[in-house]
Length: 212
Image 1 (cartoon, rainbow, N blue to C red):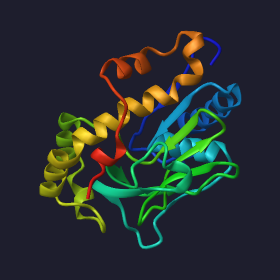
Image 2: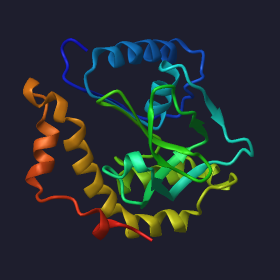
Image 3: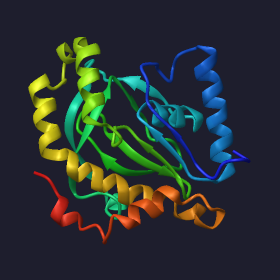
C-alpha cells in the first residue's frame, strides 16, 4: 500500500474459503492493507476476504439460501449516519460473513445478517454490489442464470424491476459513501472520487431516498 492512498477489492465467482494461491495471496495482502490504516473497501468477495483477514468466518446460509437481485437492508444504530433506515441494494452471493471481532455492524439483512461493517476508521466491508450497472446485471442474468433457480433468488423480472425502482437511489448513496470513505486520505491527494461526488452536489437527504 506504500504507493497507494486507498484500495478497493471487488467481487468475483471465487470463495474466500478457496485454497487457491490467488485467494491466499489476496487474504495476506488484505491483512497488510488493513494494518496500513489507509482506506480499504471490500465489495462482496472483497468484504469476505476482509472478513477472513480479520479472523472471522465466511460460510453458506444454513438453509442453502442465496441472494441474487435487490433486497432490503436495515441500518443499525451505528450505521444511521451512512444508511437510510431501510434501503434496497443489489446482491449476488451464496456465502455470507460473520462479524469480525472489533468491527462495527452498520447494516443488517434478513437471510445474511452482516451486510455492511467498518473496522477501524477507514476499512469497510459491503456484502452487496453498489457498483452494479445495468449492462453488468444483464450479463450476470445471462451467464449466471442457474443461480436464479436457487432458494431465495429473485426472478429475472424482479431484477429488472428492482433496477428501475432502486438503482438511482443506490447510485446517489454510493457517491456520498465514497466521499466520506475517502475523507481520511484527502491530505494525501487521494480524494479524486470523493471530489467528483461532491461536485454532483448537495447534502444527502436519507429520508427523501428512503425506499419502501
